[in-house]
Length: 248
Image 1 (tube, one colour):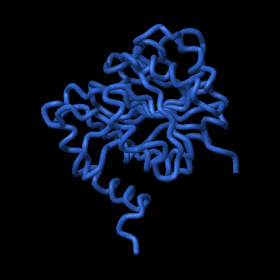
Image 2 (tube, one colour; image 1 turned 45 degrees about the vertical axis):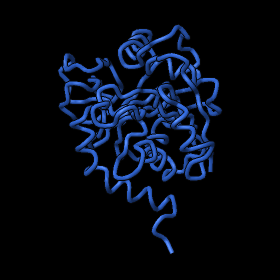
Image 3 (cartoon, one colour; image 1 turned 90 degrees about the vertical axis):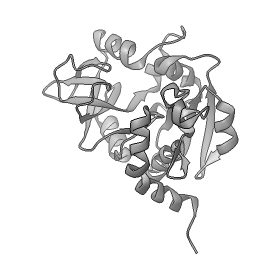
């Protein structure tokens, strides 16, 4: 069986909107059902057979490194540390040198969607696209709107806006060719959603959509963070099996 691509988790955020409930804890380490949220994402990629993860970290990165070390659930962890905030696009550009495979699974570090990551990788490899974006039917105004053509390819992307009049929004999970990541200008703070996607589409980069029928749960606001405590409790129980807890 061919090795799965490296996974990249963009988890450099400080979680400023969460400070009223989490204090100075970095957002990826916010407690969900007794464990850091980042554990849920690592448990998810492990369940699908990924073996190497690049953590793009920034705010209080030492807290994350101290908790996880160089391995989690048997997977190798590599840390890409932002000296200053780089945005999602700038952070992804910095990780390019740490990606050891031709493609990479990229996930936002503050949201969870129960996507079949194995099917996602297979669909991307079969398509020959430069990038694949997981999209879902949603109505939130603060998620990226994605317009598709009749073949399921992305035609337009508008971050945190319903201007496209489309029923699809980004779930914050992607597959990228490493070469696409490596070509991102290293010019500081760049938004993947607001700058890079529109630029790539304008120059003809092929971006396909992978339609996910479920919902995306994020912890970006105090209200959604508190709701996630209950919604993601079952996911935490699955992760506990990977940790070997509760087993005789």
